[in-house]
Image (cartoon, rainbow, N blue to C red; front, side, top):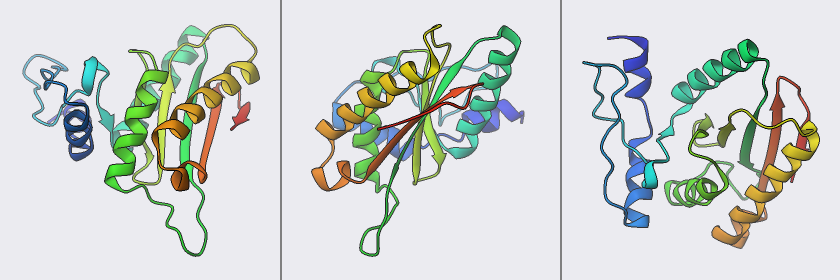
Length: 178
């Protein structure tokens, strides 16, 4: 079994199933990576937006995107969403909250962007491929603000108040917080 088969078979299927059921969208046909390398776990999100990757798969595709950006001398954004924790509250996303979180992030992204877990169950993430030529802090702040607003509207207030949304431009390490 190839590395690509392992990665494609390692999505968070329970999260994508719950998201699909929640949005009541018909199941999309699995995507084939290469001829003969089909993965029964390759479940697409609504509207063909792609899967929610687990940590291992997300980091693999992040590495691929970093190499692509280096070769083409382009930039991309890494968006990180996590919860602050205190003595009474956990910093993990439960399945229902994670489903709502990824569903709220989807409209803020393009079809070429991908989402998943940067840290499984703790830090949700998205990679926005090939961002424009605007200064990094402006693009990062705009994206972080847009996602933060979408999440605040879709998640319970107790969760939304604890969210940290950060956007990093790669290869530059400029950070925008919301």
